[in-house]
Image (cartoon, rainbow, N blue to C red):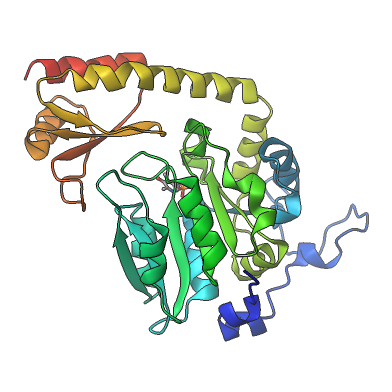
Length: 345
Ligand SMILES: *Cc1c(COP(=O)(O)O)cnc(C)c1O
């Protein structure tokens, strides 16, 4: 599919001349006296504005993720990238987006904030996506399709062939949120972004990398799409403390990989143990660091656990998730405490 970005992007964004920050203008030339940005000369290094394009972080990330730096956008969590997609592509009150249902709540919240119609296409009973159903829900005002894989809150990966069918046939933007990709065994789509002009893949520091507090999310896409995101974002959207912490965490990936292995091994232990509980009706297959389980009475069990200081996510009101709890894999001690509480029921 040949994608004409100039037809997809909101006209005001196409025309936009971005804010030019002090640090952009001299770029590339050596300098040592900085009297250009009205910063304080004191309190180094935090007196200086951070790198607006986070080049050091991106260079390291590029190696780790196998994606060229020019195809990477960094934002204040994936949430910033999600909001930017609406602001770049969707004319408020006019355009619509299509998403699988159930899925991550932020796609819908950001649609509401941006006054964009949000069309939900319910997954099948096995929580699988059907490309034809998604495409049928689209019309000439559909700018974006949201796919989350592995999906939250169901935990499973979407069928790769169906995702490719959507990418091949849809003439708008397809956002593929792989926030939980590190926990899955499938090949991630980010390494294949050059195959499609319309793909945006999301990753985050918040899950496998143990850095939810620093608020750092990534988008991988064509240089044209990354250029649009950079043009619309706040000039200094990722603060210096976050950039430093990101570089720190990436300097010892061995530690991250140990955490990842520990979570996966605990997951293998938790799924059958939970399935054996008398209150459990069903544990759904998962490729994530959490699982969805159908229980006898989700709200009662949720409240019982809260009384014991154990918090899980009650998803009983979510489509296809009646009486379901979403449970994150914790440390062995935390998981055992949860199981011990539930065995007393
Ligand atoms: C947790 C999660 C994210 C991460 O969001 P951040 O803003 O990067 O913390 C993104 N997508 C999904 C589906 C998630 O569950």
